Image (cartoon, rainbow, N blue to C red; front, top):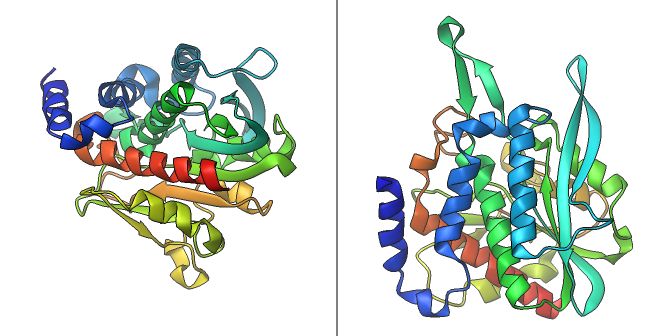
Length: 300
C-alpha cells in the first residue's frame, strides 16, 4: 500500500491535472496488476499469459472498446525452439468519423518463469517491459472513448513480441481491416522509467512528415523530454526500427512512431518490478504519447 500512497501523492503534485486527460490512478493500477507474480511473467502460451488475456479482455469491455467479430482474442501459432506455441493477440476498435485507421499497440507478453539457482523458479514480471506500454494503451483508449476520434483507432495488445515479434507478424498477415486503410502505427514499449527524464520517439527519420505531430506534444510544459532518434542506419545496434512490433508495419511501408526509453539496468532482469517504476515520469510519458496521437488524429 505504501507504493500506492507515494504514487497518489506524486500525481496530486502535478499541477497540470486541470487539463489532464489520463486517469493516473487507473494507469498505475493497470501496470501494477499486470506485473503481479500471479501472471507468471506473461510468457506466450503460459497459464499466466492466459490470465493476462482475461484481464485485458475485461478492461477492453470496461472501457467500451468494440470487438471485431464478437471477440477480442485472436490466436496464432509460432515455432518456439523445438515446440509449437499458441499466442493470442487482443484487439478492438473505437470508431472514428473516418474508416481510415490508426493502430495503437503495445505487447503484453514478457519472459515468464525461468529456473534460478538451486532449481528455484524466478518470475520475470516485466513491469516496464511491457506492462507499462499496455497500461498506456488502456489509458489512451479510455480518453478516446470519451472524446471520439476522427480516425478509427484500432487498439492492439500483441503477444509473442519477445519471441521475435510473432504477434505483430500474425496481425499484419491477417489484419481486421485492409492494410491500405492503416495510416499510422503508434507503438509503446517501455515507458515507465528513465533517470534522465528522457522519452524517445523513433520513426521521424524514415517518416519526417510526422514531425509536426511530435512537435505538438512538446509545446506544453513537461519535465519529461521527448527526444527523437534511434532510427538511422548509422545508429547500428541502437537503431530501434526492428526492435519492437512497429517493425512489421514498417516493412509494409506503413508509417510508425515508436515510444520508449533507453535500456536500464533492470531490462530483461528479475528486477524489472512495479516498485522500480517512476510514477511521475510514466504519467507524463503517456501524456506525450496521447498528445502526439491527438495531433495525428486531427492532421494525418
